[in-house]
Image (cartoon, rainbow, N blue to C red; front, side, top):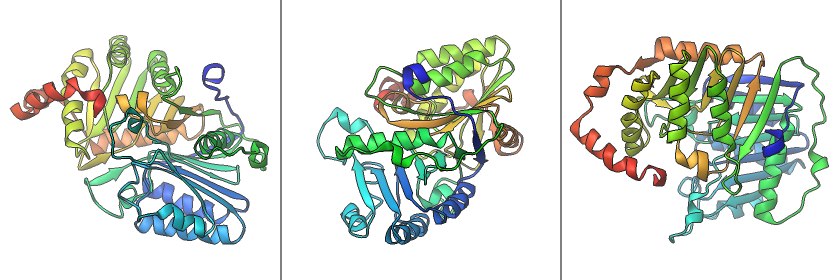
Length: 376
């Protein structure tokens, strides 16, 4: 990770795990209120709803008080969720604002490269990462696809610097401005014996498939179990191979997907892989009564990833993504407890009968859609 990706291993970092978006949101508001020097926010989706209005109120107050506030959001992810010329409005109120790759109504492959990251950095000492965008459904203030399951982590300490660097590098690329990075280093030294973390990013503009390789490394090194949560399961041949090899080696391989999808065509493709996975010995579960948006890996009670990276072509090859890899951090027990709760109380295990009972329409559409899966 360090040599090929440029993401160093960090100790002295306290990590808190949030099993729901509303848990992350509560902590997020508390930490934003404490900001003294700067606030960096980078999100794929910002929706002008109750969640965002509470956040932006704090951002404007902080900007007025002299705190440097920078906001970066994706031009397609937030295309229809924010008012017209919203960037100009925020800039006039003291918030530095940039839009990543604004949507242009023309055929261009660059439109596939989206900023799918979710990063919040406060004063260089606190960072948030995970699957939670800024929209009311992510904190269950609005129901769209049943109960919305999402997760996040909060970092305090040395590991925050990796996220600060990721944000500033993206800001420089878009704005063309140079930044004095040392101004934004952590000022609080947490000395904690709490394992190690690697906050990392993935880019479609280099030859390093960091996101996929981290996942494969965890699968290949699992001895007892590997638990996976993903809203979009469209594995390529390499991923199917390592999942199958782990299962055949006696590793307990489990994957959680949504019962209620946000995109019907992605769900059709996802479910078309259930037979392949069952044949390989992989156990598949669906999150009952809702949409599971969490992107997580957990292995052997000692390593975990929480972030933005789905198991589909777009996340692994086309998008800018980020995540937090954790090794022997104290919060891993909380992640394990959350997985155990989902398996026991909130998920339905997919059976052979479930797979055989798929409708003719679903089978027919899956044949067509799997041929164009990377484009979806």
